[in-house]
Image 1 (cartoon, rainbow, N blue to C red):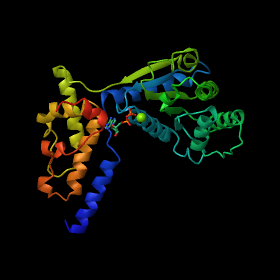
Image 2 (cartoon, protein in one colour; image 1 turned 135 degrees about the vertical axis):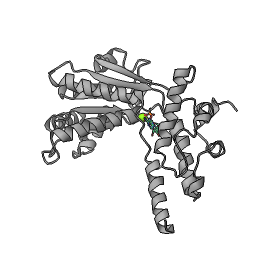
Image 3 (cartoon, rainbow, N blue to C red; image 1 turned 90 degrees about the vertical axis):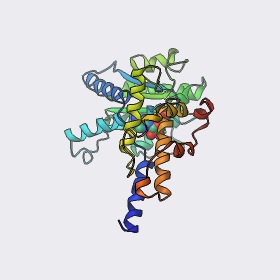
Length: 302
Ligand SMILES: Nc1ncnc2c1ncn2[C@@H]1O[C@H](COP(=O)(O)OP(=O)(O)O)[C@@H](O)[C@H]1O
Ligand SMILES: [Mg+2]
């Protein structure tokens, strides 16, 4: 390769790693399966539609799994209705609950996603009407509401936001997925108000990977190998990190987020440093150089 070609390839590889990889873990597959099933089931229901809650610690892959499900639904939808864009259809909607949300702020997130005009003087009632008519009109099938743990405080803004979700999910014939940090615990979706939005919701709990027994260890090694397969390094083969499985678990506490950060960071570092292709290999020395977030490092043994 000429130096120019090499630089181009390296830049592409760094960008690709920067966008993150998606490994089809059993948890991710389970989320996709459940979402597809719910959409099918809900299609024939005019009320009492069921939904899914994705709950777990930060960095367990909730958003990644929700987005993988969205992608899956999107591809299917596009196959069924190739010219859906010309028909003004928006099959999937994704919003994040802002910190300190109010009813209006949350309704505005929906409006923004749908490209609806917003004015500061819009009332909550008006926004709700605008959003729910639009969602019905564009035939939305799947609504993903992420960062829903931001509604955990019991204050008027949050109660109003919960009411917005309740009212939208009652009015529009879509399947709702709520995702957030440990939302299955606490009062968020279990007190009276919460039950009204999550009464018919199934739960998918995402957690970290263990290595307590041989089958867990195999799973963990498989996960590492899946990352290795996609790193795109010239001299790193899947399985090269098998010996470091315990070390990697100790560094990351079995968090897929930390593992991703560590391995992708190591690979990017090697490429960025202009390492000769025959030395593009992730070793313990390379990994030792990558620091992780404080939460993962604090509990890791020296
Ligand atoms: N299935 C997966 N395959 C590859 N990387 C993943 C996967 N799940 C999560 N990650 C990575 O872990 C990090 C945290 O994931 P994210 O989905 O944002 O977690 P959460 O929403 O639970 O906080 C991200 O960098 C993401 O790319
Ligand atoms: Mg997330």
